[in-house]
Image (tube, rainbow, N blue to C red; front, side):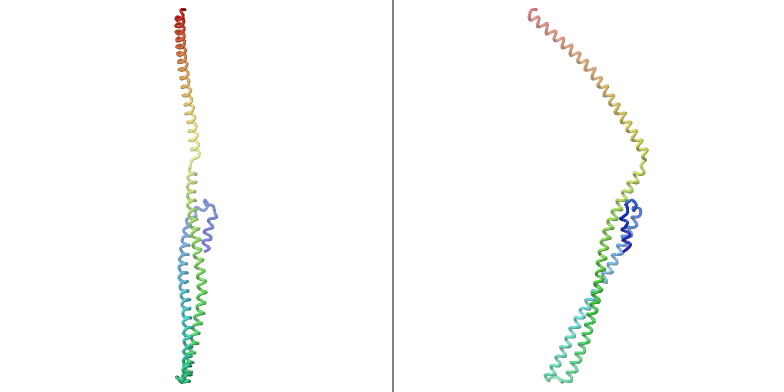
Length: 234
């Protein structure tokens, strides 16, 4: 898993310095995660198989213990028959001994099955720990891969923008702006000039109208004065 530690250390570097090498680490990380998932499948299969062996050993132990108890019961029944006089004592002792021998053999098998079960359980615990670690690692690396992909997109977009900005001819842009400023200043001056001319034209027209209005007012006043004198007989 050291490969993943090295891959995700890229995240500590600046985006613009890592962008040129991001594509390969992403592919390598994806492949690494696929390999981990295959390992997880194998570990799960092994875990299931060992668990099955443990269950089998447990069932065998219980079966053997039950058989041993049955042999002991049979020996007891035979001895009871001999005691009651329904069976020859010597024959009863022989059969009871055989039953007890079978009982001991069966108990050995039961103990062996119990020992096997303990070993299998230890393997189950170890495999279960490996499965949990693999699942945790896969989840962690998948989340880090999402972050890595997102950073790759941002870095790529930033690189493209910076590249476009770097290709702009700054001198021609400045010259164009200066020409635009000069043209705008000229247009503004021309507009102000027309405004002054318009104001001058309006001033002359106002003087003419004012002179005419004043003459008309004087004429009306003179006529009113003559009419008033005539009315008064002057």
